[in-house]
Image (cartoon, rainbow, N blue to C red):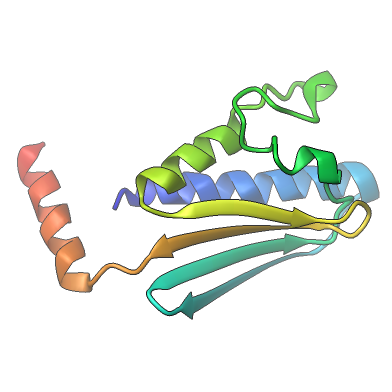
Length: 127
């Protein structure tokens, strides 16, 4: 597990929510919830921003897709998030209704603590 990459995913989602809420309403509320569902961990990021158009939900994670091009967005943030999450055996998706905010859901398989330590030790020995 590359914790820096996971941190990058979470930070990207948080910054996107902050930008959307600030641009639309001058601020807003972002809730972050974690839960274990069987053999997976779920982290949900739910904001009360402007939401995402239904027709954009399927394109969100495509490289270079952005709704912020006129504001300097290049559309690589969520694409990178998708790649990182997938590389870690997880999945990421969004649920939204325009005007009602958006929820980004990130799920990862649970890894036994011992297994994680072994992988981290191997990584530090190889660097």
